[in-house]
Image 1 (tube, chains in turn red, blue):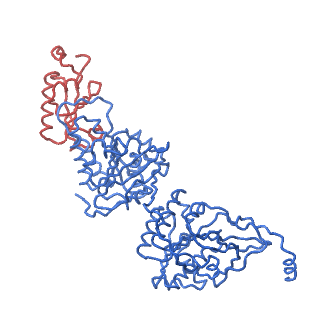
Image 2: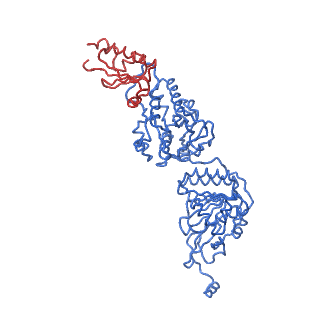
Image 3: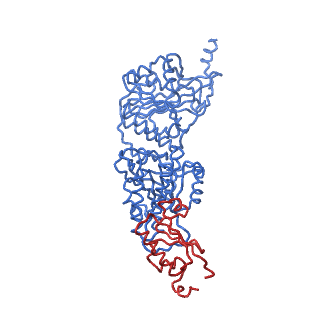
Length: 101
Length: 502
């Protein structure tokens, strides 16, 4: 994984709703599967920190922003669609089994 | 919750003509939907709404841009001569950038647009803004593909705006000039006010129009009004009233207040006529107007006097010097004097004010001294609209109106006022300086008297402590009206007479 390095992910949610909780759970599950130990997730509740939503120009919630590694990517939704999450993170599904060191 | 309960409370926008067709502006605390095809002027209307709101009324505003990126938007508006950066710098304007992100967006599951809603709510709370523009809401359908979600979120946003009591303008695209109100049926959510902008190609010319489709619980002018977009005025809506030339003509004559003038005009003015007095400064226009007003009061008719060049005290003093007690007539309720600077408000406001005064005071005579002062405050075509609006209203109400107009040159000549209103007026009286042998004298002539015979001669006009006097026709002078009086050789007989006078 030399080319990939660590994953830095930011998840923007609007309050701790069931949808927010679902998105956090879905994200953790995917990350543990494909990048265990190599990721960091920051959950940002924009109800508490609206300025951060402004800075990141968040419209939809939940929004997942892949900050690192570049390029930057955005995924919206509760992340229940695993395939879409992976492709959104630039991880092709068939790569998964082979990408482990 | 700061919901406005008074449906009639309107927020003036300061956009030329807009407050007229909406009869006062946008309903306060409500959302107004502005729909129009691409390039119809939605963004400009929205930006002018906040720009005027900030600069004319000292309000704070928020602009939510959903199509253009903020720097692009600021640059585009810059071309109108509106420096939005300055407003941002002094804290009266804030932007929310909700334009499409260049970063590809993946959708993985259910979402809503709470992010946008929270940002709007946060900024309104933080700034205490009174105005908001959202341009354009339809862009959300392009950015987010689940249209049922977007519709639901638009509903939430509009609802939140209403709950915050912010007066807002939301723009939305439409595809046809005459068809469905908006592309995505957004109007279902914004039920308070709907405005349609059109840009129709007609006879090889683009004609922009604005129409107030509805304004819940309130009245407004109906129909399409043409408008123009110019820098730095922005949007100018022509307040063409729906009035027609269908007024009945009166055959009743009323007196000028001067017997010679009555004779010259073939028996006085028609009761519903518009009478224009044109002359250079100091030519006796105000005196003529004063005489006309005094005659009305003397006959027990109500007179409305609108003065745009003199103060109330000055007017009273001048009338006093001619032996006319305006103050008493005012106390008796026969005379109403309104003094205002033309610059104090826009022409539409002036027109509205005058109409309101006529409606409430119900005068038989109206004097406007001078109508040319209004030229200063607006473009020529709006001045013309103003005059048309005023004269048609005066005619409808059967108010005999006297307008004075100051010519730019001492010798007379054309003025913009005359060029634009002479065709609308029923009678025109010219006052001119006449220089004869190095002495300045005043001349008066009636050059138009619709539906009546009139004296065609140019008579001498003098002013003394008793007011105005009209004497004999000028002899031996030509081209007075043209402003270049030239002496024509007197007959030998006349020459002999003058020789022995000295």
